[in-house]
Every structure is written in structure tokens, then in C-alpha cells.
Image 1 (cartoon, one colour):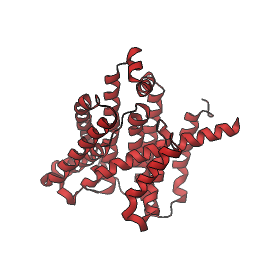
Image 2 (cartoon, helix red, strand yellow):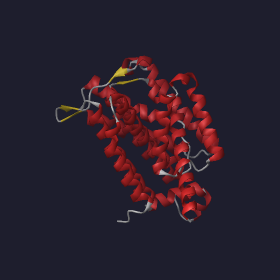
Image 3 (cartoon, one colour):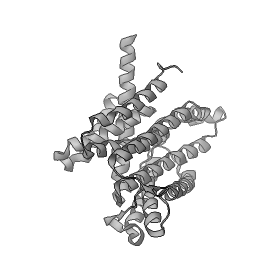
Length: 313
């Protein structure tokens, strides 16, 4: 194993950070922030496969996050399903829905694709808001604790290690996918769909495949969030949340798995630092997105890595 490669070095660095981080977390508030970073990072790693590596924008991924969260809540509260079974049911449902949606929507390009995914996300948010008998409507609904073999998961410290482990697995799977023939096909689709088709790449197949995969990851992260928070609202599936996720991916660096994690960390912490300017939070997100596209078009992590390599050479 070559520990000097960016992939191995990045995984070891991430694992080390997750291991030592509790030493610097004085209370439950800081644990809560770090857990939210981990959940957002899980979603962003999957979304980065779609946006960064395949070049397909999605402004509705928070909808899949919300579906996963509400499946865990509804099946647990109303039908007494085990937490893990409800989580898997939500992931399967999202996989089916995203497949059915992806077939027509992935034929769109550019701003048409962005508008299509935006409309999909808005529809999901409206359904979750209006179906008050099931979802609790705008007020939201409680979610049962995550229970495995009769033992319920409680406490920020326990959830910290669960989310950390899931994040490591997600990053590892993403890196393996990127380095596989599927990953090379995705990058060829991003570069030029016409050229990819000329070389024999089944472009529609790979676009649908990665859309479904990223949606399922978002659903699983939504279920984890639901059980951790113990309460969910339709805001988790809203347009604002989708924009936040896309901004995290763009800021950290598109086509950079570790960049997605860094972007999620920065933009999860930022609102806590700007609580005085809460009313201008979306303005801040917009300014960050514009600044990144102007001054760091490749994103934070790829830009800094390129500068570091230049200095070494």
C-alpha cells in the first residue's frame, strides 16, 4: 500500500481526524455540529459523483434526503417497523423513484436539467408538507430512536462514531467507484457525451446509474439524520437545503471526494459563526458560490492541492 498517494493519504487523514476529534469536543453542542458535518458530507460525497464526476446538476437532492427521513419516521411511528428495515425501505423506494425520474430527466442538459431537478425537489417538498395526516405537515413529526436487537442508540458520542464510520465507508466506496471502469465512464460523460458515445460508452445508462446511486446515499443519510435528531420537518427536503448541498460540493471542489467533505464542513460550521447575520444566510451562500466560481473554479481542495504541487516542483 502506497501511503503517499492522495487516495490512501486522504483516507488515513480522514480516519485520523475522526479518531482524534472527540478530544477537542468539550460538550454536546460541538458533537452536534460535527455529526451534522458528517451527515452533510455523506450526502455531498454522493452528490459529487453526479455533479463533479458526471457533470449533471441536481437542485432537488434534498428531496431524496427528506424521503429517507420521513420513511424512517412514518414506518417506525405508524407501523412499528424496525429502524433498520425502515431505513432500507426508504432507500429502496428512493432508488425506484429516482430511476423512474432519471430516465426522462437525464435527457435534459444545462439549465433545463437544473430546472427539471428543481421541480422534482419542490414537488417532494410540497407532498411532505401537504400530507399532514402522515407527515405532520409543516410542523413535522417525531421519529423513534434507532434500535438494533433491542438496544436503542442514544447520545451524541454514540452517534458520532456511527456517522463517522458511515462517512468513511461512503468515501471509500466513492473512491473505489471513481477508480473503476465505471468512474472512467462517468468522467468521459462529463468531458463530452458525444465523444463518450463514440467510444462505446452507454451514456444514458451511466447517467441514470449515478443519479440513482447518489439519491440512495442521500436517502440513507436522511434516515440517519431523522433517528439522530428525533424530529423532522419538510424543511429537510426543501429547496434551500438542496442549494446548500450543491454549494458545499462546489466550494470543496467538484470531482474531488475529499473536497466534498471539506465543503460540507465549512458550510455547516459557517452558519454557526454567522448567527448574528442569520437573515442573510442565503446571501452569504450565494456570495461564496459566486466567489468560488470566479476565483477557484476547481474548488477549494483541488486549487490548494495544485498550488502545493507547484511549490514542491
